[in-house]
Length: 427
Image 1: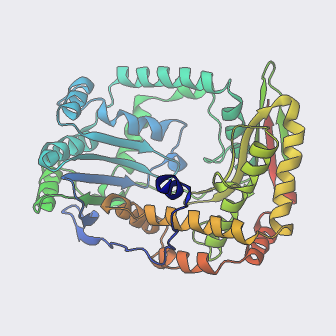
Image 2: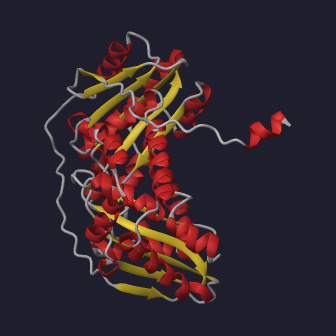
């Protein structure tokens, strides 16, 4: 009986009043790359990352940044793609290579005892990539097939066309790939991208974990070995104006059994003083499982398995969106309920228990986002690239705890007006 009673008693909820932040130290490598590092953790694991301002925003041709990044591990003057991948597997290294809209990240997680060979291979890939023609052709062939399959899915169609509506068809955030793009990219295109953007003067370095004391000497030795030295800056970051049309559009897809809904707008980004309040209001609307959209559209109406709202913050722009997939027969009804919840965000104040649940969820998530040196260096990376300081994090919990229902209504009135939304339905 006592055991059953204990199971029926909810655990005590302890408020999160503050978060311990480990601020990184800084040094400069021999080729003038700034390196920030946090030493700590209970396991002998190291995270090493190079970040370039070299995403698709700055590419001259579609797929240029993606291909130049993905093919870094597909051959150097000394090693084939198979040899490179065998070495990564042999040392048990988790290679992390990603080309995003604004940035390219190249790095790894490895055991501290394998740091030396992992660094050697990483810098060889960056400084000596040769981009074999057959590897490029294979990558584009596979990517083209994935693109054909994706363009048959209503969720993918809605996502890419929604961004096109927000930014315009020629903006890097809004441009949609075509089949012709896969045949127009050449090896010379990706070599040129590498030479322009994968440069020391365009790079940041981040290290975290239980790394050895001689790590900086190790990194500098690899830089010198592969002559990856600072030169004259030859990259040029572009500024492109969005020319989206902000309208409602429906894409009819024959035989589709579902409709994918996207509703949203351009919104203030991380550098805006009101961003934390905007983010909190978004979470109440559709940012977690207990949100208003989930309760209404999923739990009460049963129109979908899942619905969410989110804010995407890029270096050049930020946008808010709501997304869900519903049966075609209930699409109009789901739209009506979505707009009802948007209106309710400013007209219907959050009840005390609803607001407390939101605060508990957000404060716990904030605490988890600083758990350990890897997460800590990631949080620093964010504020560095967005040209912010630690006041961005320091201000969050006090603001969250002071947030009232009326504050969320005020934010909704200013930033979540239904009449300003772009709407895209595919299905």
